[in-house]
Length: 158
View 1: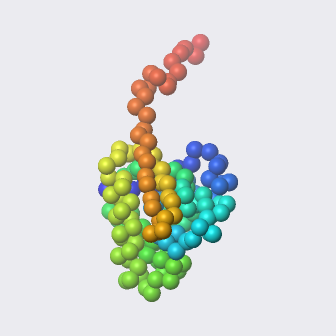
View 2: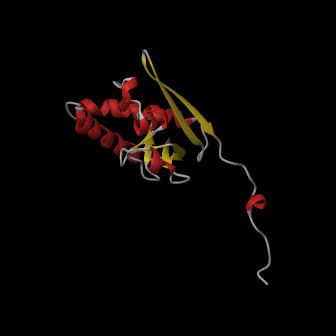
View 3: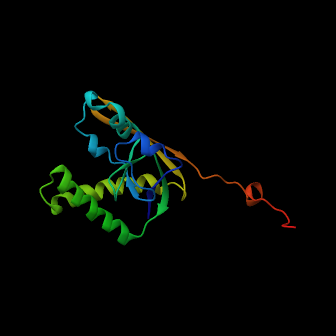
């Protein structure tokens, strides 16, 4: 099974998000966080989180990029439990039993999104607010296929 991990190429996430995700967290799209937002809330760093932020599943911070990676079934199940607990603690779900299917659906959506991509493929999310709610689109950037000779430096130490 595949899922995605947060990745940071530079320090920009630290500047554009109120709460940036840590590097190498498992991630989900996390659009549920914006389900009741209005245009008035889309300003500054909140707009950036809405427009382009993936949700890190450890810190619950945001990341601009994620990379497709292999996940074991036990890790996936632990993430379902973690996200379900987050739904109870932050979003007022009545209990874990009620939150668990919603968390599983969110993570299954992310796994389906990653499934058709090679490992290390970068994913980018773009969100807009429409009259009917949040609209998401996704882009993939395939890993470079450079041969070792194209990037390695060969030489003699003498």
